[in-house]
Image (cartoon, rainbow, N blue to C red; front, top):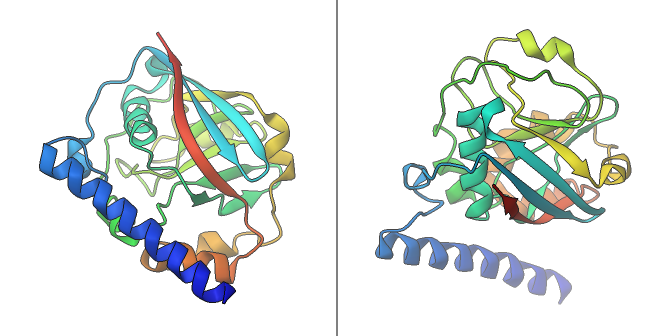
Length: 218
């Protein structure tokens, strides 16, 4: 009974996402299924509030630090891309990483939606937030928070350019489940292809982002 209810919930969430995306397409507005439609310019500064299974943390973004990264983050949060996502990489004394949408259609749509690099204008100090990358000009949707200072990342190919900093909710990061190590991160292709049900079945102890919403801007 519980398994059937859970399956219905997963299917319902996927259907709801598809309906929302379809409405956006029909109205000519932004759609998570069409990355190019999310192209708003971010404010000079703004905040984003992430509610997780271990509490809430807030990020303050300064666009001047990394304009392209800030714009991409702004559009993703504005359109609820980060809702209902696992914090799949929790490495103590290094980083916490997320950014794979649990609707496989949406996750696949963003795999090649890269943005050009930003110059590193602010070091990867403790609590900064940065886009992950796989080399030059390869940033898409995945993010990480530096839970310690990682200045070595400032000089890597691909330019790990911080665009903001966590301003509250620091204790959330200390409470996130880290027992799977690099396991989920090493299976990112399966996270993309199989989505929420597979993740919850194979990594049941992972913590999740419930919602991510924009806050104050200037």
